[in-house]
Image 1 (cartoon, rainbow, N blue to C red):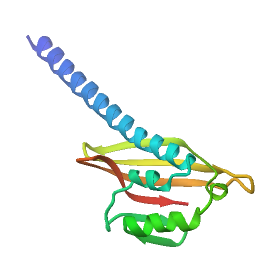
Image 2: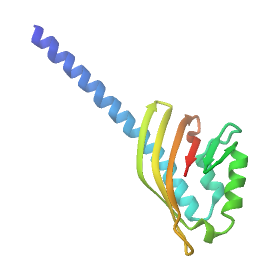
Image 3: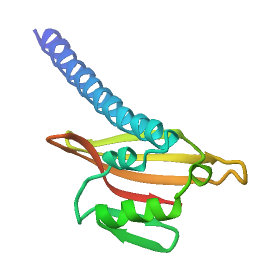
Image 4: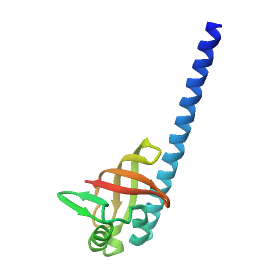
Length: 145
């Protein structure tokens, strides 16, 4: 009886672990779809569509270099000013993505970005904090270098 109880406990723990991994995998895939849509929008020259991946809120935080931009509107204005032509936008690629699910409604993404442009090929690293809202996963904090 004791062995049967131990076996049952082990199987229960195994099932819970597999269920959590499956859920985390689904969340990671949902976040990856948001990021893939951002890359597609960027590479089509559509900053407005790219920004759909961000939380449209005055509480959005975007950090780049020594600049902290707060709010969705100032962030999109910054993007449009800095990348005011297709040549400046180049072709965006995200790589080395590590998606860590923090809870059912929050995740952290560590990764690399690069732009392929005629004049240069800037690249860097980023950390993103995503939150799940009624309309899907959104970036609420972006620290890009």
